[in-house]
Length: 157
Image 1 (tube, rainbow, N blue to C red):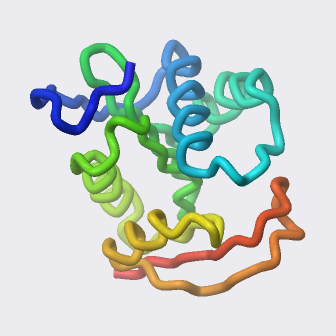
Image 2: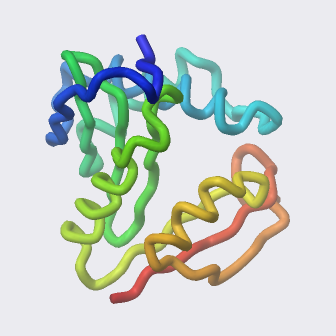
């Protein structure tokens, strides 16, 4: 259950994901994507996303989860020098959790990071720019599965 921003502070544990976290991590991704990007067509069904997390993301990528009260409320995926994913459960935005995950990403990849986000996702642009990322490239979306115009950001220390 998503917790409103006005709720009492809860301890948040950030840790490496385990196979047992696949379902909760996928659910956080699904809820976050649908809340943040309602106009962007998802390229995969909910079940395909769940399988992707179970069989690819958790076992093959450096995946981190943020857990509050036994529930996964945030997730981040690093792959080489790419920040592949950073998603928060909708009720957990604006509470510093994204900042904590970004700090961890920079610690894990001290030589720099690249990432893609959709052009339509202006809150993400503000977040990444606030964390020192700069726009490097824009595309018309023909090379991503959603066919949505995107932007590549880079951070170099």
